[in-house]
View 1: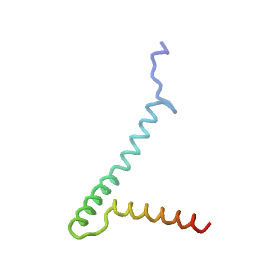
View 2: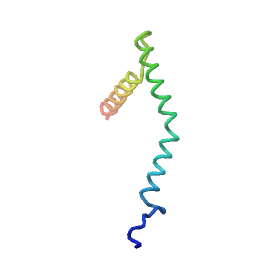
View 3: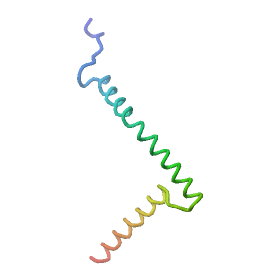
View 4: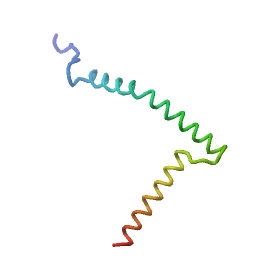
Length: 75
């Protein structure tokens, strides 16, 4: 009979799923804000020519590459 009993104590799958669901619930409002900000950024880029998230990531990548190249050139 004991083999048919589901475990729901510490370390069980149901506990870890509960923790994951709680984390998702807490972070959901932040995701909506990020999506809205990305949309606003893309719209401003189209209308005004300002930098959006993708442009920023591209610039940061170029800066990293330049920094690495600079370090390699000085050694």
